Length: 176
Image (tube, rainbow, N blue to C red; front, side):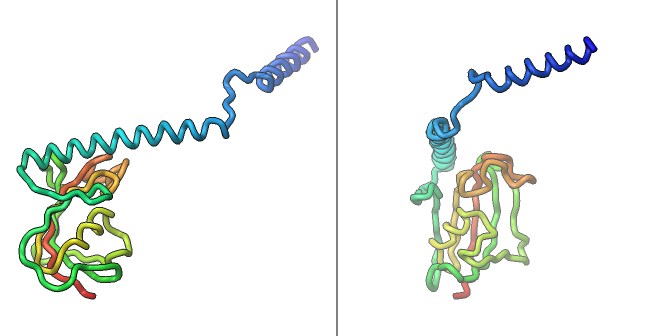
């Protein structure tokens, strides 16, 4: 009986202690703005770090590139024809993807170009955006920061987490 009353007493003390402890509690509604502010600051720092790495790459390779408002870096060259692709158009292209350190990740087969429909997703946001600056027959170099490429986790294969990627593109077809 002493054992049972000891267990009941211990359980009662534990329950009371758990219910009255407030030193570790944080009011959820008061902490959300603080968390958002911290995450925004961290995101800004990471974006600036990515931009610095990309600008270093551009400088080392003596490239002249334009930055879009989204943070995509582009350089389009060569003679092209027709109108630039827009949402709903199917584009066909050859590509090569590398990391900023030059490691090749992917490339299209010489006899098998890739294609996608602009505005339907399924490819990196940066690739989709960059293609819209091109015309059939042109080549381009795009540098996609992580938020326009494979984000925080990479592609779980050849592209590591939080990696900027370099796309070499040749646009060979646009079906309006």
